[in-house]
Image (cartoon, rainbow, N blue to C red; front, top):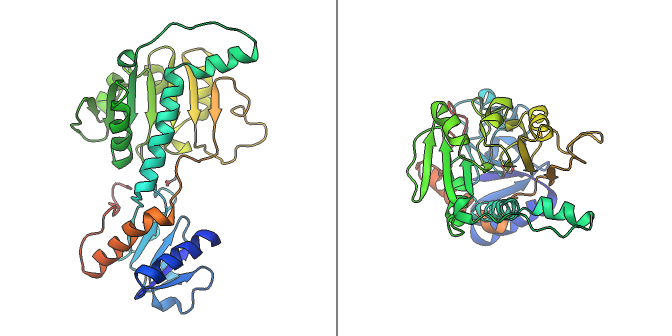
Length: 308
Ligand code: GLV
């Protein structure tokens, strides 16, 4: 059974040693040394090579080394090739850390206090208790749920929105397009953790941002394409939105003259929310390969029609 990794060299070596040590029956190859392409059954990668199904004629499954799979053109892949997203517990842990950092920073008005410091001002802003702070999470998959679980411990007033109805302890849940405005109207801090699909592309736009309460703050940990960048600038410049924390952008890195770089209402980080680590992801990947070998359904398998 042959598994090909197309990842950066350091991580490739780490994956290879883990398999050699714990699953020596699986022959691991590292791109570009693929050997006989007909032998390759599995591919693990962030970006598959072009025409992957022609290059690897016996490919049965592609394992994304990422939580999101929007970078794959699913329509080009033959149905025999299953696509599986990465459910590394290390990714969830890292996203929880980033989400808590950003929510707490906004809750405790850090952007304003840091600006005050630069102006040598010592002003105490009005206090907002955690239970008065309404925090809304868009996307209630494994990452959204993990974030809500941790945010709950701070006592925030929690809201959640997803495509389909969910019930989550101590979270007021909303579903579908009809309930989106009602959800947004109750989010002082909005955190996007949606998968990028046909339906969610551009979902953070002039009309949805306008539905947020005045002075709301946005955190984007999903994909850059969820956000219409010009609409965010407009909402910040008009004072409707107070601040945005963005870890993902349409173009990464943004152009040198992109307004986000120097905008006082934006904190920008270079897509560091989470990164799959072979040490934490290995067990998940191996368990899925074993499932596939036994004809069982793999965990995190993508539903082609839904795109996630
Ligand atoms: C990173 O953005 C991921 O999808 O894992």
